[in-house]
Length: 296
Length: 307
Image (cartoon, rainbow over all chains, first blue to last red; front, side, top):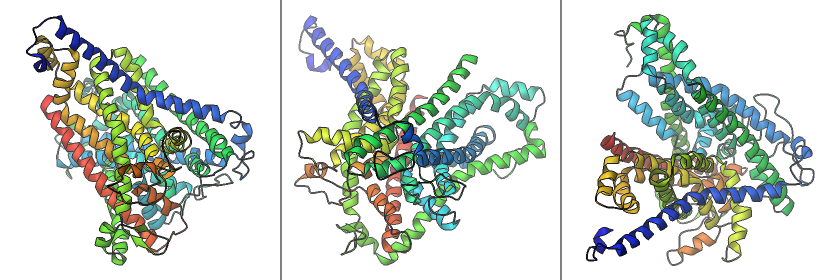
């Protein structure tokens, strides 16, 4: 930039121009930072206004209905929670186990680096492709059944597993090495050190990461479509092999209805419900993280 | 790797060894997942390519899996994906880069502690919600001054762009924060302003990290499904180079949207349309996988330079 003004004497004029440029660039950068946040806020405000009058007790406790005034969200809500519970049971032990191996046991060899690169890559595989994996593996090969609670949970569990592993690794890595050394110094074995020293210290971080990943799981739609989960279910799931819908699927289905009452009423109520559930899940994660930060 | 590490006193117990292998299995499951993805895609895709030649699939300009005359040319779907990718890149790359510069160079610690989580929220909103936003709020808003179809590439691109802003900004910011302060100080010492330091020193020095974030974000845009399935429409259409704007204003169909359309149809079973799902999925997987790998390798370059 200075090169452009080389011929000018080094007086206040040059300083003025560059200062103006400096200030306007700063404002431009700040504006860019706020673009995404402000537009999301505007959209959320819109949907919240639209949901008023639709999001009521009857909406939360009724099954879906072709009449917008009677349509409800309960089976999708319960379906999402059921799927999420199974996902938590699967991903927590597997994710933490993999993270413990990578951080505590594995040496920095070729295999470890390969696993690490592979996990990073898996985190970037489109969710719709995971849906095809679920379709081929759990519905096709293992015959768990189209759109069942288990098929849905297994599929999405594989999808969020890389995220759980990566965040659990970060939590385990943040445990100071001196504490491990102290444990070894007392004659503890590696497993005793992991169980009594590393895991308790890393647990808040692991919980935070897992809960955030579960929040992502609850919003996933494409994998459920691929394993042929029904977009509308009228009854509650009553076992691992019963067909299940989920909140995002029900929203997707309603969004295709042409009536204004659905587009700007029922769907808005569904979106607000989904976001409130998500917000609750994320706040739990943040509360755990804050408590942990205060203690150290 | 197959031998337990006996040099360490701690892992000498049988129990310790058992746990070691148990945890190793968990880690190896991730490799198994990759293998399973590739196999499930390949097996059905190979079946599909026995019926439809790969040349026809890759060069065909018509996509019509269920309506006569049946055609399985993937190019219209790739066109649609390209439109969304270009459109969302025009939104996310400049905004994401400027955001990263602001966060890394201008923002105070206090501002950063508010702005970063707020930006992360963007990536955390379910994409089905974004798709709904695009369809019922953005399209009608744009429709007041643009000749838009109900389903169009533009709203979907804008929404995908907003969704991927945090991917660009957070990775780019990490790269910029990794630029040593001595470079900035040297530049200030020469009398440079913050603007000059940011654009002529920090950004070039963090370029590999920035590129890596761009590639990763574009890979996300390519694989994004629900926004395009809801808002972009289901009309497979080739890019018309004489009228590129037409792709943004009209209903198009990216690869992922085509997959959802087949997935929600009643053609579950053994037919070619069903198998084409896996051929398109394989194409999508290969494209995003290669992009993620490139991003990973480009990113590892700056880590080596500055850490």
